[in-house]
Image (cartoon, rainbow, N blue to C red; front, side, top):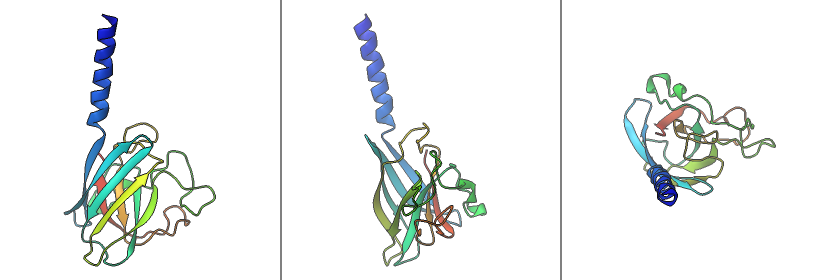
Length: 166
């Protein structure tokens, strides 16, 4: 009886984990129109993010971050998403001596057609709702490249595209 119960518990927890291994996110632009998607996949050491977002500044680098709040209200310029996700209270930026924080990710290049296609791995976050989890938070693409050191957000500029991680 105990073995059967244990097997049931293990099966249930494995099924729950499998159900949350991949999450799809829809992006909206500053006008509130759909402009892309991302698929987030949990890995043993972090989260792999594959994204394709259109209507971005062609031929330039843009900042890509995880923001703390799962809200993408375009009427506020996506300010509803709050600041960068920072559960360990680090300073912003890969070039900062006390950084980076969990929401920092490398700049991404937008092709000549205005579409960003990328695969980004973040080993400082998890695909759950724990302290380092990003479920219930937002992905954000900014208008400029992150300088990797200015506080609190790398001088990344306007928020162009936002997607809630659900």
